[in-house]
Amino acid sequence: MVRRMAVLAALLRRLLQAIGNCKGRGMNTDRRSWRLKVERADRHLEEVKSAMADYASRQPFRAVRASQPKNQRHIWLYRLEMTEEPDPMIPVIIGECLYDLRSALDHLAVAMAPKNRRSSAAFPVEWADPWEKDAAGAFVHDDARRRSFTSKVKGMPAEAVEMIKEAQPYQREHPELETLGLLSSLQNADKHRQLVAIGHGVLDARSVVTAPVGVIQQPTTGFRPNGEEVAKFGFTGPPPDEREVKVELKGTATIALKVGGVEGYFRMPQSLEILIGWMRDSVIPTFTAFVRAG
Image 1 (cartoon, rainbow, N blue to C red):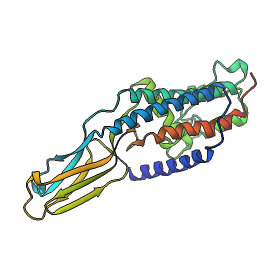
Image 2 (image 1 turned 90 degrees about the vertical axis):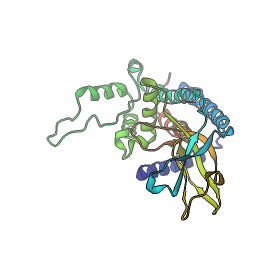
Image 3 (image 1 turned 120 degrees about the horizontal axis):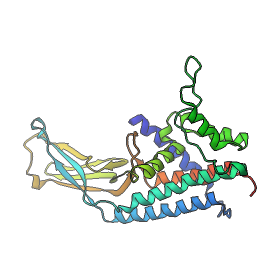
């Protein structure tokens, strides 16, 4: 898990830097459908930010003492308890944002295809190489996967097709942490099974323990989901009366995205900002060069 989160953190830093470098260029006047889709995704993001700020303002959390085994009664453990659920509309809005971004990819694909192929064109997303072969030289996957991929990109400029292939999740060491793979996983979950999974918790939780032995501060970094440890301390002598011990928990109530098969959580709203920035500042400028007239 530590290695996965380190990879994710590095990816977030690179993408946020790229997005920051693109700011200040002025409003884009391109009103084609894929840009309008991204603009709409950006508005959904603002709705999510507003709902998150409202949730944080209520400080809906506290530290609750947890029971310890008999041989650890001298150690006091406190866990995070969220006293209020976030707005249930938040995952709905996130799903709409993801849909707009995924749809923008397909709109670009259609615009790159010749007129007689536009009803079949789409931006494919593959987690396994359809052309992978085994040691004997036989294809690992069935013909249907290759036919599907080929049909979606047929007639597009060869350079665009090659770039689409290079963007596929199967080309990445950690496909579940890369932009196209992350977008596909989140959007497919919302579309086919249930709302986008979110966790609620506290960002950068800090516990301040006031006890007869003195004041103990225990800071943490990152996202702490509901139920996780936020304070742990012990007494060498007889433990004091619990009424003499005060645990004050500080931090920012927030939500985070949970992706199936990936340990940990994705920060919000940063994850959506990264996906939107990737579409607006990287994908669209790259593929717009191959868009056909009309």
